[in-house]
Length: 477
Image 1 (cartoon, one colour):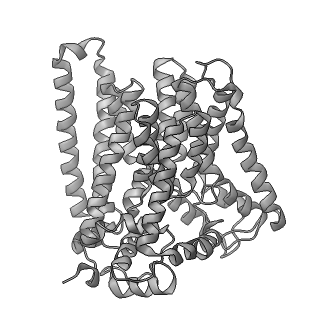
Image 2 (cartoon, helix red, strand yellow; image 1 turned 180 degrees about the horizontal axis):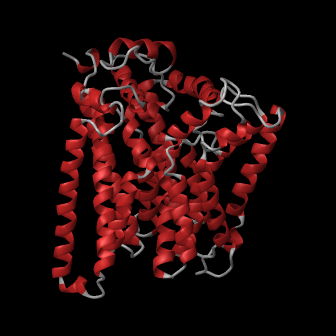
């Protein structure tokens, strides 16, 4: 029987136990204890082998090793527990992963990817056993995503979600390791401390909803490393092109390539985008691609422009100057929204065009690339916290400057940025908004749900300041 026409159910007993997201149940507590002891023995074994190695024995500090090993053990324990919980639940409920999976099925069945036909097809194809009433599955993603998911759609839904999370986790770990290695900070202790990133909220959110953000970050960061460090501009341009096909805003990376005069990379990126669009048109058709541009994009902006979890600059402007479904504005002046948004975006983009100060070294290339990535996240109308996984590159640069060049102030900045993206905003919004009558939530309350926005601005200020300085190796804080 075709998996697309049967109820979606994955490990229903385990899912029902973990749906409450509390780990004090019998299943959860036993699992947590087992993972803890496995992490403990793994950490002890690694430290024992490290101390036995003459190359790593020099300069060891027992107490520092105990601290970093404790961080590693606790991080891996919590990360594995949450990963299993989120993956089990996500394999049995509707999520963002469902959009692309069902869209791929719709292509195979000759159904439209958007609108009412898609919604009816999803309702007919999927019956989530533990969700009642059944959710309405709508597709707000580009048609290329559905084409990309075609091979995945041949796998039963529950296993497709599990495999997707496994691959995404592997890519995430590889990204972190490559960044540490490229910047010369892939030490044992540093990698132990970086296990904290396994419990980082953007990563956890991606696992819970089957998001494509880690794949996107892999394309963007991988494309940069291939272009600047590994001498593979053709492969880097190819990854940049794929990122642009998945989400529109990575197209701004072409500005970086122009400013750095990476002409071959620019050519490959453009060819990749054109080829991807032609492939999508050949499989899906012209009409559905035009329908996405004419109808789906405006509808998506209308629904999520002022959404509490949207951390773009435009979402803040709309929250302050316009009455929304979620909050009361500070000043009711919707006519100012476009002008103020344009002004803010202009101020964010301006340093990118000050190319007189660009020094053609890897460090300057990094500053420019990070600044453009931050500009993409701030200037695009909709930015979700999990999309900000691409700031791993900026965080790695700050960590390098802190450890190698002794700029301790940057370590504080790094910790602050990490914290702004570690606040569970879902719980925060739920508890704070519940204290207000429906539709009477003040604008400043919803701003508390956007700590990631402040983290992006902090990074933008640090890298813009460094980008504009004349001294090639300076990195001020």
